[in-house]
Length: 267
Image 1 (cartoon, rainbow, N blue to C red):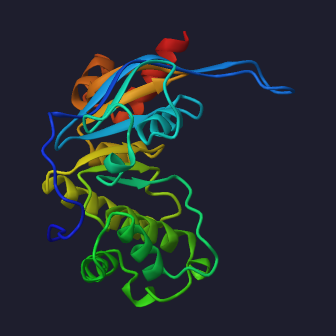
Image 2: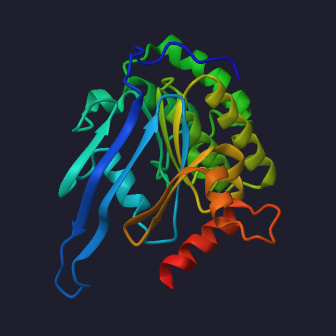
């Protein structure tokens, strides 16, 4: 895919696009609900400029909490969360982030093009730039012919592609992708993987959160493993697999290594 243009003004960043430093987050006890939940327990990790990092873990590991902190939807109890040199993830900073949530909700009468116009205008893009970017993205994502259909008529996979286009419309410097393969068939997954590889080659910084570890292994070189709010590993996939490889193994997958890390922690 040709590099996008016409989005937010490009900025110069320090090597760390994302930095978590000893971050704690606790959800308080609520009436008639479970006790206070310590969602993150002093975790630290970073995403460097031009790097792709897979944030992985079981349900309840702390991935969603980490993303909410990154997007500025909540604040850490302790520690620092720095995104694009900003400790508050201000509205200005968010204009340089492309965020794909795990579940997207659309107004029932909104068309795909109306979604992209809305997303682009939120980043002060001109109408001309939005149309140019939409042309590139929707054709690449295979939904150009459906651009004027209501999103409520889209299949889940088509909605996911539309959400991806909205996340990319302003040519962001940092991408935060939460379960980007959700609802996609094998062809759709392959298309998105190819697109992410193209974005990597353009120097985009990508945080990739997924339960599909085969996809994580195909897309990223580095992973951070969260489990019950703890950081169990942060580094290169090759290093992780080598650490967890038994003597009789010639090679193990990321999924095998992940399972061994979790079981070792639980034992």
